[in-house]
Length: 391
Image 1 (cartoon, rainbow, N blue to C red):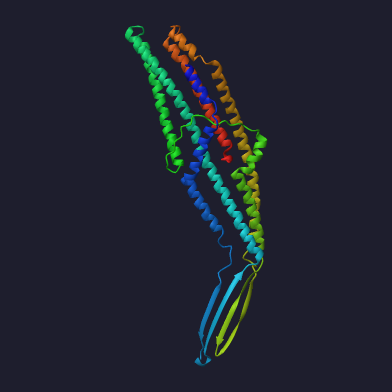
Image 2: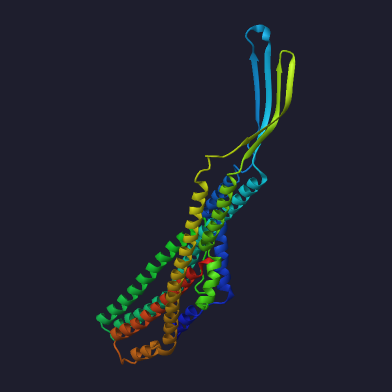
């Protein structure tokens, strides 16, 4: 049974750079192949192009008139004109700035969606690490149960054991085999989920060691998290967009101009020259500035609420992660200090305890091993969610 305990300790101890590299490579592969991310990138690029439309000069306008007189001796008249309308340079520059700010907003929206997908992929990897570790442990248990069953089958044939003891050994083996088969099914389901995230491409992941993670001080960590969080950055950028919209709506109250060339021919005479016009927005932009200011106030309130919600959620996740970390460490230390597996085997071989007592006592140890693996997995999952902005 020393082999089981040594194996467990190796599974619970965090791995070195090899495990970290393996998960990192998997996440990079998923980021490259994920179909949802590809669709989101194309959608984002299309919306960025949409934001760049409507900010340039209006199309030039060309006009031609052919008029005949009545009576006929008046002759015919032809007119030709070409005009171009334009805003003042200040307004054009503001439209460009608004477009750039809106594109930055779209990019942060994409990063938020990407973060959620990468977090799902990382959590799937963590679940696979736990499943792989548990399968290794269950394989050892199955082999041990097979050894016990074989021994009692031999003892039954020689008359050293009765049918009841033999049945107990077989039942113990069947339980170990059933649990191993069940976890294999769970592993296959996780691999299918990883395949889905990888754009339908199979991806191998056999790591059974968790990466060592350190829980930082909350206040200093949150100051960085609030700056790097895509959701919080999106809220801040929304304020910048709203401020630019306010400035743009104010500038939209300025006149726009048209300039061009016009020619007129009639009865052997020709007139030609430059044309100039001005459009004064007296009613068209009514309430637009007020609406833009209201949107700015709403964006500022949403940013403050977003930060408060982020702080509360992160505080909750931090406390949960810290609690799970303490539980995982407690399980680890307890298993290192209180394993009775070897003593139980010696007592069984010496006839000091029955097979039933041995199986029951060993079951307590197995339960502790399972809970230790689960605690380590839950800690890793909580930490991944806590630090999702770093993905």
